[in-house]
Length: 203
Image (cartoon, rainbow, N blue to C red; front, side, top):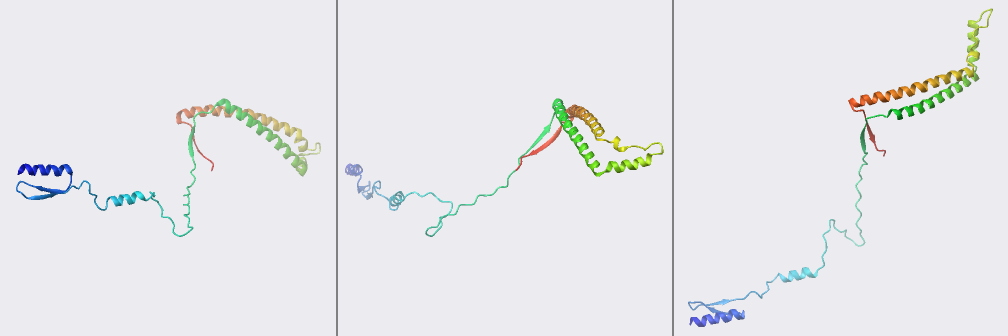
């Protein structure tokens, strides 16, 4: 009896179908094969998702209504930043300082000569020398002499010569003092580090 039951169970397992199985006490149980059975609600949902096209998520909801277009987002305005650089003048070349100061002092001397000539012409046209010269001649004159002649003393050639001498002295002194100042600055910059400058970019 037990051998027949074992054979029946073996046939049922080999076919993979539903059939009664008897235990050792003679009771009958039913074995169900669920390998080929589809559970409801799983494959239908997967097929439905597979049939629909994929839509990527949107950060902003699309505007409703026919012909509505989404307005572009305004760009954020940022305040312009001014770049700055902090530099230090560590050394001044004495030779370059001498050349620059020489040229500047020559230009200053020429301007001085021209300014003196223009000023003398304006004062002579206004009659300043004649009026002041007459007053001085009366104050310093006597019966024997006519006094001090200001117009002959402050003539245009004398004024230009005197101004030219002053301009030449100014060129020599300015060049020498600028070169000496460059040497002194280099010595002091070795101790204190030099002059610091902050440069900013033009907007």
